[in-house]
Length: 310
Picture 1 (cartoon, rainbow, N blue to C red):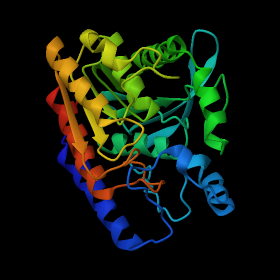
Picture 2: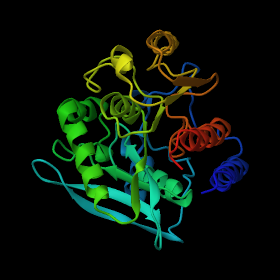
Picture 3: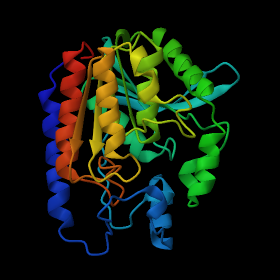
Picture 4: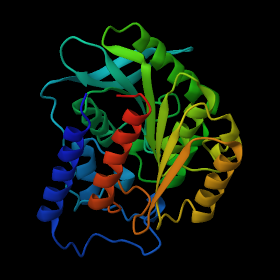
């Protein structure tokens, strides 16, 4: 599987989107970085988010989200048998015969919505089997809420053990599928899911590499166990992608993770995009940074390939 094609694809998508958008005075950006609780959700943005299946609390009415088609793919919702119930998950993969490397996708704090599904399709276009479960299904659907404290209640009601158990259930499901090669297994995730990605790689030796996008490093509603405290347990290389203007994850935390990983002798690389905010890959939000996104996406694919997830 060649990694150059998907990199080119997302670069061209990002570039064309920038050309279409031009200057948008209505797209507000704080100098210190846009955090979800800062967003002023209008009735128009709510309607557009619901129509497109995006997270309501963070959707910008001025955004032009990237949409990845399903040509050459098998993609859609499936059900996975977890310990206590069946959970929904979105799966995208190349069509036809053959085994492919797998990327487990941890959703944002807003749950499994259209942007996360599109990420799975982008990974499938790059030759991967990508699966993203609804990890909040027992507590609610944060993608339909506008109140950030209510969203965080759903997150707080989802224990780490449940999240890791659902991850295990998805991997068990894929182990029975002829198209999935779990010997080439990676993890990625965004925001809340970035923290979950760190925890995947600290707890499960089956993962060969992880790429954590602006994931929290200290304890909170999730992860309960701080990735920073458990970095000594890392079982595979991890690439962290962070924004220098992210006011939710201080640069001091990023530097502390770098130092802790070095002290523990772990293979951790962290890249900080100085001008980017939290959520800089999320093209449905005001925080989207096309240039940083294109660069980081290419680095993610190269990191997976370097570490045997290709």
